[in-house]
Picture (cartoon, rainbow, N blue to C red):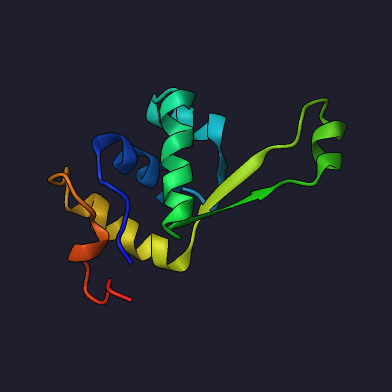
Length: 106
């Protein structure tokens, strides 16, 4: 399995997810300073790569707070291990980080 292209923005999103159990997009934006147009495509790539999973909160929770439901993101077990490795390595050369990890080929 190849990982997502590691850019400084992707590393920032991974770092924000490493710092918390789960987060919703606006929360990730506040933590990283990135705009939604940058965050959501990165999250979509991380979900597609299996590093992140997403789940919608119960609509009743949002309704009780007078807002729409939130979509929460969290690192998978594999994603957490790879995110630690990817963010520790610093900015990477263009290409997939997953190929450089031990046992990354599946």
